[in-house]
Each structure stands twice: as C-alpha cells, then as structure tokens.
Length: 146
Image (cartoon, rainbow, N blue to C red):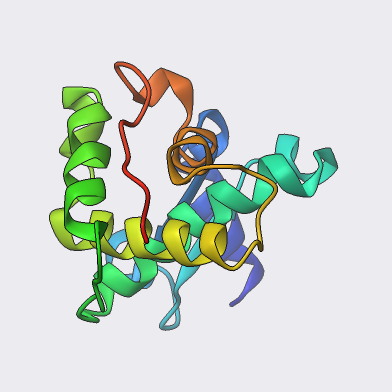
C-alpha cells in the first residue's frame, strides 16, 4: 500500500469502532492495490489477551464469511449461531453479520472453549466478550457445544 492509501482509510472515520475486517477493501475504499483490511481500535493494543482475542476471533469469522468459506458446523453450532444473531441490535445485524458469519463464529467459540484455549468457562461468556455490549440487546444465550 502506498502512504495515500492509509490516509484514505483514516479519512473514513473508523476510529469509533472496536474492530473491522474487509476482504477486497480496495474496491470499497478506492485504494491503489488489492487490499484486505483488518482494523483494530488502538484501545485494544494495551488490553490483556482475555479481552482482545474474542474480538479478533469475531473479525476472523468475517474473513471466512467474506471469502465464501463454508462453515464446518457440529453439535450446537447452528443453535449458537442463531443465539448470536438474536442478540445483535437491529442496526448491527444489517452490517455484515450474516448467518454464515455467525456459524463460523459459533464454531470458533466452541472449539476454543472445548480445547481450553480460552479463559472463558462457557461458549456464551466467550461470545459475550467477543461482541461489544453496545452492539447487543443482551447476553448471547449459547448452549454448550459438546
């Protein structure tokens, strides 16, 4: 990317969000070269892993959705994906929060929790940490994955 591309990204006003991911962002933003963009608010640069990792997993689910990767769902992933979508405020739901995104997200939360790769004791607690509270109408009512 050339320096002007960074100025274009900054001018779009992303500083009021927690994070974002866009495959093919160059098309949307008018950048000079093919670019996928992962944005993370600078506030997260100094937080501990427990707070940052869930949000990064949330954004990686967007990546898999945007490259049209089919989710490998098991057990309660479908129910948990529905719980994720039901928890989102209506204005958030319309912004790239698709069923396929939620399936990727639910699966990732389940795998991390089942393999003890997260300090969260339940899938629901991990998902609550991964979705900013101002984007939800309440907690994610997820079910145990295994």
